[in-house]
Amino acid sequence: MFLEKNVPLQPYNTFGIAAKAQALLRVHSEADLLALLADPHLATWPRQVLGGGSNIVLTGDVKALVLKVEVPGIRLAHETDKHWVIEAGAGVDWHALVVWTLDHGYPGLENMALIPGTVGASPVQNIGAYGVELQDRFDSLDAMDLFTGELFSLNAAQCGFSYRDSVFKHASSGAEGLGLAGRAVILRVRFALPKRWKPELAYLDLQRKMAETGMHSPDARQIFDWVVAIRRAKLPDPAVIGNAGSFFKNPTVTPEQCADIIARDPKVVHYPMPDGSIKLAAGWLIDACGWKGKSVGHAGVYEKQALVLVNRGGRENPCTGGEVMTLAKAIQTSVYERFGIRLEPEPVVI
Image (tube, rainbow, N blue to C red; front, side):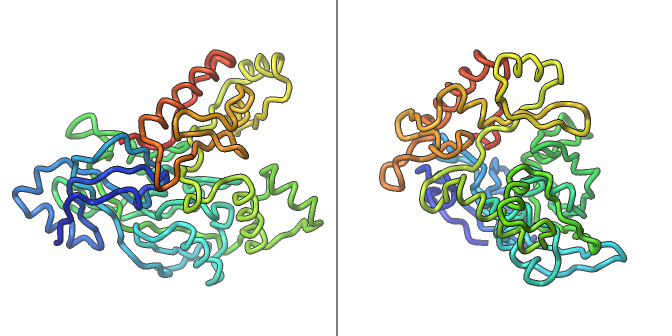
């Protein structure tokens, strides 16, 4: 076990915010965590798990021990009559996994192409895009209890998936509590990819691609290419403009609430959900409040997609976490005052 001290975290968060970790441990396997727990001094430190840094806002230096998860590897774990079960290490880049599955003939993740971050973070957030969520393709995961060193596995039901949520985002309420935030590190994730694959094309942007190209029966690789093109046209590359992807969750409202908003704003973008609720496009709400292209200090709202907050200062003069959160709170206030809706941020604030 090698502990790094005073580690700059700017390269490890996609917003490009300048901050340092008092101490950092790179986790390549269970052995690294067991060594940590066996150290009487380090075992008492508070910990902060870090994957690809694509869903965090750093508001200062991190005093907790940062566990930088870098578990490698992708393989076909096994298969059933209905699925190929693919296992990937928690440190694997998510988009690299999507590419690997398609290259090896295992479709099913193509709608989630180009989502930034690592495999280990994907179940925490229950990531999703263009009509597919992680829970739709999830099989199980392996994790370690950071207090006992016990290895355990969870299936989909035990992960408590919901919209951009899971058991890993909630702290335990006691010894028998179900929350795993701050208590566990995900090491490997397995995905059940369907042998009887069918395209998921209900999302409006994909419908437009079909209309533009005249291709009404695209294969998985074609959908992958469309999703990559759509995301690159709408969203900034974190390597060029620092950002954490979609900053706010799309809110859900009742049909009655939606009807009230439509009466005042007929162009509001909304999607009916299976449970009868209506999902509103947070980016549209923010744009309607006039925030697109605006800035607070070096933090700004992306010109092409109001749902994305960006680092306008670059690597040399980066925005601070404080500027990002000041901008976010101002946007929340505007949306609430106009629409009566409280936007909830997606990134974790540290």
